[in-house]
Amino acid sequence: QLQLVESGGGLVQPGGSLRLSCAASGFTLDYYAIGWFRQAPGKEREGVSCVSVTGGRTNYADSVKGRFTISRDKTKNMVFLQMNSLKPEDAAVYYCAAIKRSYFCSLDSADFISWGQGTQVTVSS
Image 1 (cartoon, rainbow, N blue to C red):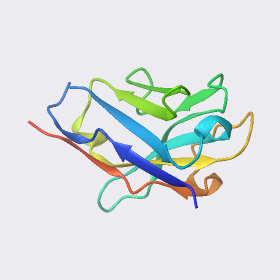
Image 2: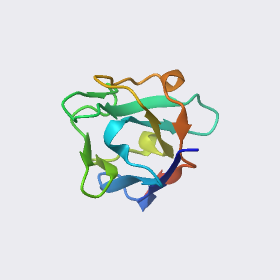
Image 3: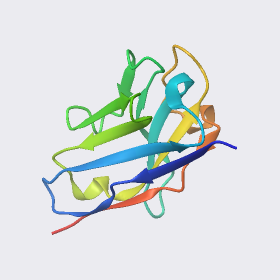
């Protein structure tokens, strides 16, 4: 069973930044496409960003383009989501998810099979 662990969430003021991390336990992320998703109370889970196995392909939801950056560090076996210029509407539980598929990057949660437990992001003054 693949285990993913998110970290880096917290409380930040509007306009602030956070960097979320997604770490793998017991396996290498080298062969997995990774997606970041978020879910706010009363809302459906939405895709935020994704990165392909090689990192050569990325995608972002329109609502975060220009503010969020996804990256992967194979030496650390981690994937990151740098979030800048945070807005109150970015507040949610953020999840990372994995799928073992090459040349793939998707914002559809149905495409991913392994999920972390989530990390809370709160944006408030």
